Length: 208
Figure 1: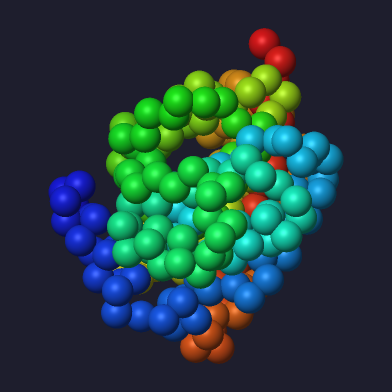
Figure 2: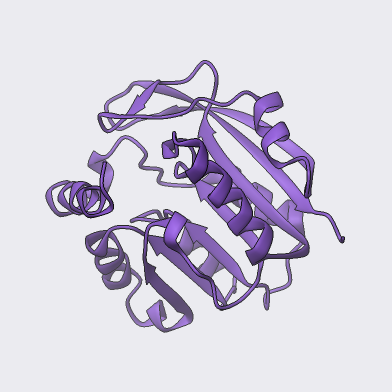
């Protein structure tokens, strides 16, 4: 799918569905928030939510007192809706519309969060670009949390092919520059009462 086609595809979804009508909707992003606590981040930490869309993760970060947050998504519509939802607190967030593989960060992050973007990268060149981007964008000893469909999860999302990941495969993708500190699986119950098994892996960037 061309970049312009990908953007139109996701814009169409966010323009035509309510937030709780998409399969990835979570009222409370419990595991993501648990990993934020595990990282013991100061309130001054720089956090990025990749593929944030209309996720409520940013709302919980704001409620916890974090004020240096970036939300990145390929969809203008998703970013616009999220900005409207958080209201006056939108000023604490750096909103970026971009395909993550084209993203050129202007700062480094203490915490990189991605629930459901990485598994859409099925081209090996894009996968390696993404990993190189994280290596560049995350501070030494910074944390990276990646949530993907697991090896027993769905093989598609929103009609698109994805890559499933086992814990071993995920660790091998990141082992050269990162150390795994924790992992968890989750049976995510969609708004349509179906089950999607996710794998979340938390890595810490090596100091050298």
